[in-house]
Length: 317
Image 1 (spheres, rainbow, N blue to C red):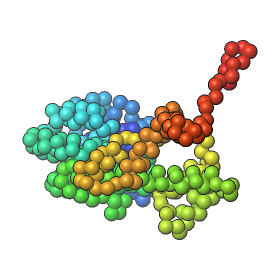
Image 2: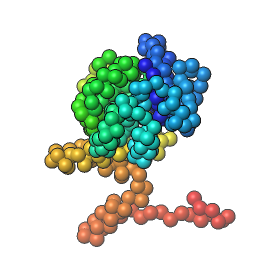
Image 3: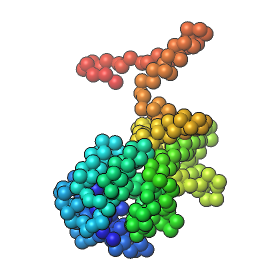
């Protein structure tokens, strides 16, 4: 099958490679053709005959045979909105757009309605798998009209491992399921992080890489995330070279908002989101304020910030 592809970076580029030349181990053969548009394409795509890279969306659409299918894999928000708006002007009735990024599900519902008014299809496909997807496949959660799901089935069958994709519901459902998936991921990562910090700071001088390795062999908390943690600890048991800054890309916030809308108590996911905010604050005014209050009401000692020492040459240490 021929597929247009917008966004051929680390993840999108690997998806294009799996579709065309297959998985690195040769178990997935690929066999599809990709016409891609990207400002900074994955260098691994250079020389791949089944991947044609063009420099405009117009050229990509012109190179596709109707009915066209165009997969959009760019950052959620303005970038996705801009690309889909432009594609709506270039495509024809019967063509379809697939958003495989992490868009907000309500935006996906709106985009589906807008394209439907032009007699075009829209699928929102939440895609999980990261940089490992080319090798092991991508888990894909698809929302949209069953007609377009059927049309895209050869692509989904190649991208996903066996049983790794599903049509989960109407437009918006795919991105909603992926949103909750990422909210759960926040909670899992925070639980692992907190547990390993307790181990790391214990009186026993524990080898936390050894423990991660141990827990991945038969333990009820074994998981792919823990396998990745094991690999990271194998490289550096203390993780001291990594700054304690954890970004959030939006899905955690949207998950908490959905929980509020639905009246669902989600304390673990909410706390994991707020923990990410806390990781980015070297000043931590709230903790300073609490320490000041304890000093005021109970005379509890506070730890003063040490002033930098001035050296004879005027520098500080």
